[in-house]
Amino acid sequence: MLNEFLFEKAHEVNPKGIHKVVPIVGDMELPGLGMSDEDRKTVTSKATVIINAAATVKFDEKLSVATAINVKGTREVLRLANECRNLKAITHVSTAFANTHIKYIEEKFYEPPMSVEALEAVSELNEELVEGILPTLLGRRPNTYCFTKAVAEEAVRKYGEGLPICIVRPAIVVSTYEEPVRGWTDSVYGPTGIVIGIGTGVLRTMYMDLDTVADMVPVDLVVNAILASAWHTAKNYKENQTSDIPIYNFVSGAQNPIRWGKFIELNRQFGIEVPTTKAVWYYGLNPTNNYYMFLFYNFFLHYLPALLVDTYCALTGRRRAMLKLYSKVMKMANILFYFSTQDWKFSDRNVRGMWSSLSNADKAMFPFSLREMSWVRLCETFLIGLRVYLIKDDLSTLPEARKKWNRLFYLHQILKTLLVILILNLTYVVLKPIFSAILG
Image (cartoon, rainbow, N blue to C red; front, side):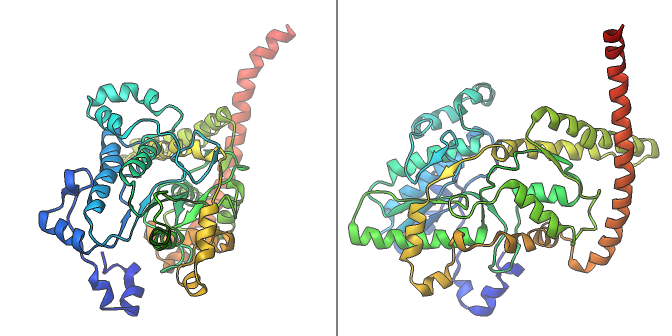
């Protein structure tokens, strides 16, 4: 892992320092984190800071798996922390969307949907039984990820009492803003998946409200905030010896909001200049906040073209893949509908206080002020990063990609015209009998 290009800068700046990283074998789902006795002794005798960033971020993960990693794992980390003789600080990484049933989310604990012990007991039940009662269990929370992260916060409140601990709640994490390179990511979750779908021409419509805030934060700024939170927690705990557990809502919407419409437009503006050779169709997103209109678009722009392509492939002896592809795309999109059609407001007073407490030197070394972040600068390299780092299409292929892009554009115009004619004809066929009956 350390030989990946992402760590080249670390090797250059401090070639010996990076090799101080010592990996330890473990498993968040196992008692004692699955660590050997020897490794546990090493950690408890030497560790001064613990950052619990381990989690399953799969929104539709089975409740038993999400509970084992996100809740039981968190409790095991805190048990380990209690054994650490030189502990200065613990940062537990949660999510800004752990309490989506509340529209104004402050930097405080909320009543959990279930106690830690009750959830652990439920997760041990037969999986079919759990699946049957899952909607009732989730209540007003959209998925098992948000649900278990909320209960994990309760684990921190209960088992972290008396420890120098804090919680950082990032919003949707996207690619790097600046460090170590601009635009890097290795995840297709969230807005990243949407933009890849749009940029390759696969995603033609999306159920979303363009006027709602897209609360996203670049991963390198999140990392800086997490590191700063550990220092801030250690400093305040030493000075005040308080049992209060600080919470930091690390969100962009409170200080520097961007709406989905603006975010998509910026990516279209910059992304259209750097098409990929892996594009299957020309850019053409038709977002709507009307679910029935989305179903209409989805049929004509996704399902019908995929059916035609797969039929052609079947007749010519080629592999049929489009319907299967759209099944995956829409499964991912359905998970995001909840977040792309709703608005939340956040308080981030603690984050602002932490930022103001940093020295100028530390602000330069660990920048995380979202007020000073430029969305234009982020979007300039967002699609380039996805192109190069995620779908592995080097910029050397740009001339070839632009030729393909132009061909797709003209084909897109032709087929769009044919589709309009088809829809008009179908509308005529459906409405003609109705009007004939009305007019007698």
